[in-house]
Amino acid sequence: MSRSPAAGLPADPCEQAPQYVRAIAPYQPGKPISELAREMGIPEAQIVKLASNENPLGVAPAARAAIEEALPELGRYPDGNGFTLKSALAARYGLSMDRIVLGNGSNDVLEMAAIAFLAPGRSAVYAQHAFAVYPLATQARGARGIVVPAQRYGHDLAAMRKAIDADTRLVFIANPNNPTGTLLAGAELEAFLREVPPQVVVVLDEAYNEYLPAADRYDSLAWLERHRNLVVTRTFSKAYGLAGLRVGFALCDERIAELLNRVRQPFNVNELALVAATAALGDAAFVRRSHELNLAGMQQLTDGFRRLGLAWIPSSGNFVSVEIPRANGASRAGAAFEKLLRQGVIVRPVGGYGLPDHLRVTVGLPEENERFLAALAAALA
Ligand SMILES: *Cc1c(COP(=O)(O)O)cnc(C)c1O
Image (cartoon, rainbow, N blue to C red; front, side, top):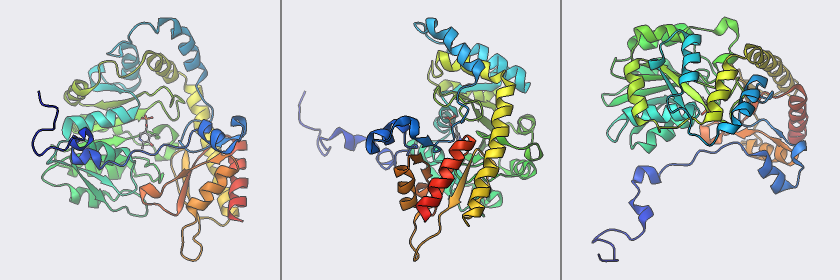
């Protein structure tokens, strides 16, 4: 074997990665508390992180107990089929187990959909300002992303319908959307589903579903019967308080579930995540508390924005994007973000989402929201 590269090939193995992989801009997560503590010498206990839409109540008590009980079993592989969790989900949602696919976070399920249905020469449709994982998952398959301009920061479903091309195989919709918090009414979504060509899979990402007020709720699972191309995704990361464990799921037609399971890693959901999610699913009181805390916290934040004379995008999630006014035509959101960091408050810049004048803040505990508002007032003074 010759040690020199084959004719015409660069010696650098990284240059062998497909161009569409090399072009990916990595996902930018919220800054971890430990990182800010290291960088600025602020004690971790004094840092408020409102950057990743985590549940400020932390882990549900029932989930914590289940985790502790499962610790001695960690020498074994988890149940690769997730039987117990799937049974609980099946009972909760009135669907058979073969219509449920578990993911290492719902992010994993979104990736599985992209792996199963996208490839070079195919396309996915999603909205401007939509969740960052849609372009990432699309690009990693070498597929084309068709980005549909937003309408008042939200999904423009009529335009998305028109954007569906002959090579389109997936549509991603987040409802509510992150980072805008915008919400589509159930009737609009249903009308959209009736118009989408049946060979196009629609992924309806409902990561924040549990936070919707009663008046905004709609029954997307009922649509699964009529629309075999619909995939609804949900997560345990937000209202269930299990972001660190990584567990989410898809509800869909059993034939689509079967395809997703083919590309799923055999043990993608770890044992602690399985037992904690099963317990959390049964902890209705915790979800209700999370929901109520969020409504009150959202009010607290938006009241604070009003007092500061700031505009925000009305949000149906557990976060809200606030607009930082420009100075002499120049965005000040980046500077405000830095000033908040120096005060020990971590929020999320959303310039990467095409929102260079906004900062996204997660609804926290009342005292965290207050810390943030005071720091924001100081940052803008
Ligand atoms: C947070 C979030 C998810 C969930 O991510 P996990 O992988 O389940 O933690 C999915 N979609 C959107 C729009 C989100 O904001």
